Image (cartoon, rainbow, N blue to C red; front, top):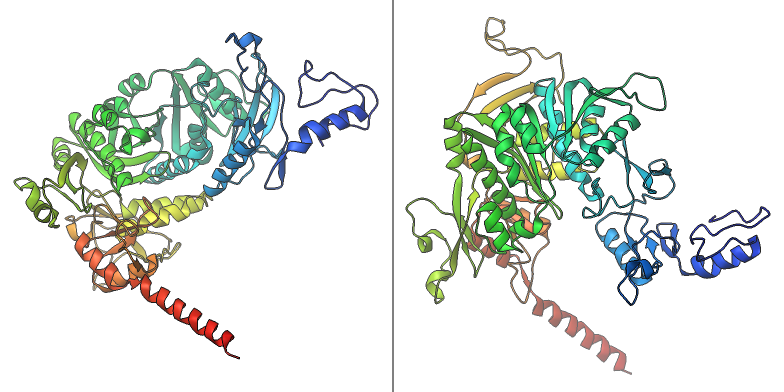
Length: 606
């Protein structure tokens, strides 16, 4: 499989350079492949990764430190990602981490999704990857941002699909949309928008790097998409291009100051706070801004000094650190919007292992800006029991927390965190429409996540999400109820005379309502493992959710933590229910010990 050993003549090894192994006859090449490459393979999901001696990695420096006099290091190529690892044991551990994260799809299996093209002028070979029906060609070092301008992260697939669904929902409201992918890199996100939404969007992809701009234009040709203003036609066929994309070499701040957009997506390498002011400067009213932050070190309280510099927030490591990160990013977004006399409505906030994504709708006017600014508050956090509550104006710190740690323990137990966003993190109506878009475009990977977000936004454990019903569904966005008729043919509301009421249509019906604070999802969550009682076996998580519901509390699971429980109960009430339905471990051990003694005595009886 590695080389054709049937033909005559001398042949070279496909996994060694000419300097290491010269061309030889088939019988000698067979022994070389078996003893050097095949003998030390690593097997994964039916694929075997043989050791490679090609100059894929950097030269190992010599004794004098000169890299030119060094030697190439033998290595393995991971079948899931593009990383190269020297040791076999390290590769096995690396693959186990992929399995634990659910990443078992082989990208380099020789399928149609991954192909190799002719070498580029620099001597590197392009790799073609396919995601959501969109092909992109990449350089071999695409997964290392320090060594490649055309950075591509396969782990951000969930992020790209969530952003796509939010744009698809906005495209249903009005079109054509002018949308901006401010950090194109390979252009994968903007190409997906143009390829699937077609005439509903006018996509602009920008990047400051010449290499990235060239790569984006080549990827447009690869997907039969015409570059606006370009003279080059899509390669491979004479068919008409399916869409048009504008590719611009410009700084993101500059293009956002020059042109207005309906949808802006910010995904820089690290924090996005340097681009928020420019994003809110020219975004249109009722437009959407999505922000992806990948600086998890500062967001997850691993570098508090960097957090203070970038977000002007004081935080500590807590059990709810992921939601704390999402609220911290939203606070920065709200301050940037307020500086432009604009407010915002949070539609979605997701914090996973590699990124924090927030999606907000922009509301123009100083009144909306003031309403958003009022939701920026300090958080009082107890460092002993981890109870937390948002600080209200005029309250003392120790009198705010419902726990009595400050009275029973010496010294100060509470700290002030923030300022943070204290409003809701989700919009149920928008999430339901995102789920419909995910089903429509066959995005099976994010459908369970979106369903969890819907249950979390409603703070319920019910998952009866029905699609295609002919009933009217209420969707509340920005204080407006949008009644959407999901199937045509239903007549509008009528009065006693049988005539349709004036001012209403069979399509969307808008009606102003006052926001109900009791319907908002409770802030933050409790980890059932963090608050478990020592020496007691706690109930299963789903059973515990049922017990909290029977006690009269609103409860749901959360995507921030698989063991987290979002509820409107206080920590004391949470612990009382947990204690009530936990079982002492000594009871179980005593019963087991009694059964063991009985069996032993029975066996010893003649």
